[in-house]
Length: 294
Image 1 (tube, helix red, strand yellow):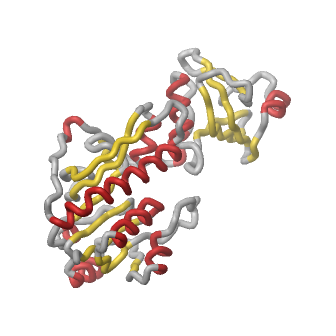
Image 2: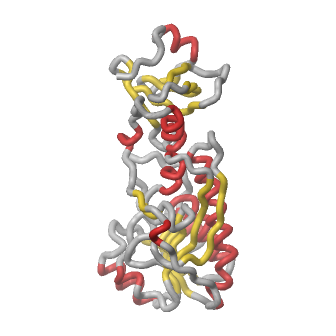
Image 3: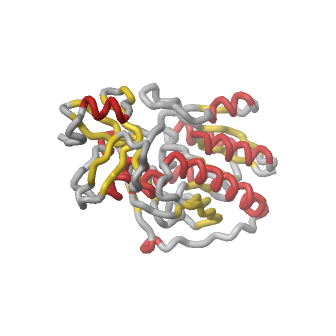
């Protein structure tokens, strides 16, 4: 039986850990994160699953701490797996498993290496993304590809919609590739990094709308950071307004209409001002001149 140490977080971490257990992998240790009290936790808990399944589980602030590395070394794992774990695993950890370290990434590598790949793909107007199971190297998201599953992105899909599909695709990719990994016969395809791209993390303030941008760019930003993410925002009469859902097609249920920097119309379907939702009638009463961003 293959022995693994699993670094995991988020719902996809839960689902992938279940795949390993279902396929008979001996999970000797689960490493996960403490939830950030300032973050909206809308996803499932890896720590809760580990507890329910009787698996040893630790929540270190730094997975590369020598104490953690020594603990993993003592377990003599065949594999290390990383499923949406948020910290980089250093060379000391990656050198420990006898049969390799593997990560699940939420894009079709080599495209969208780095942080929050699903959000970036939506913000940049992609029509397809996916999930990739790949070997881990010292540099993020650059190792050989073992399995990939594409998913479509519709013109009005939010990042959350796409994340759900990517999560399902990632679990499917792992489930299909795992028998070959365990047998030592899984294909390893080197990445062509020149054909890809790297993106960094995003902060809530990156959701501020630039009204000089074309309407389609604003629409993509809105859906790329829509709840449960922090949301796109602007200011109206000095108050923060979160624009949570938009359309490029005329909609009778629009709360308001404005235009992008290219003069194209943008229909606002969900809007919060000062933290409270506002409907079309209330918007017209309070802002008869429409949206005049400041």
